[in-house]
Length: 265
Image (cartoon, rainbow, N blue to C red; front, top):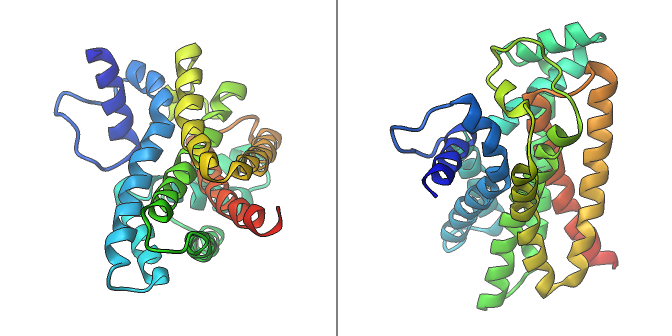
């Protein structure tokens, strides 16, 4: 149990800005095992984001409360995944060879592709999340619970889609200095089982209220499939930035899927 707590806090420290015990560091062995808790981190980030939405919705409009929820989400993770998304936009937008793409993605400066990508990403998140929240109308506790699970399931499932790439593809960079290198090592059944358990459970709970929401799995993992194939084609695998971009894109696809399923199925 003590070891598992250490692994969990390693995951929490790596993927968020939430304070952790002083004895926790980025030890490669623990980072490798921490992948099993990546979707569980989504539960935490989603819960904090929902709490911000809930509190601000008491005295502000739904749309404004959603903006604050997004702000709190970014602050909680330190824009960890958004930064990866911007780097991927810059790298794949401006590079035409594997070497050039990897060099651009490693540059800390943000370019035009990254800036434009982030603007469009947040516009989509704001609009889709606002509309998704509005689906569950009413002041009753059931509606509030569904909104809560919406937040958690979006963050958990999108993180599962991202982390599952390391189970099927190779890490692209050769340099051992990359901070994401340790999570790319061999994984056993505990990492795979933990990722899928924590990644899928919120959606299964969500389907208790609307069974058809399980259909959201399909577009999310289709998106994951094509993103992974695209990364494989251009850089022979993936990087930490690719995982961050996958998480962000799949989160948006999830909100869009919930809306389309609600309206047309």
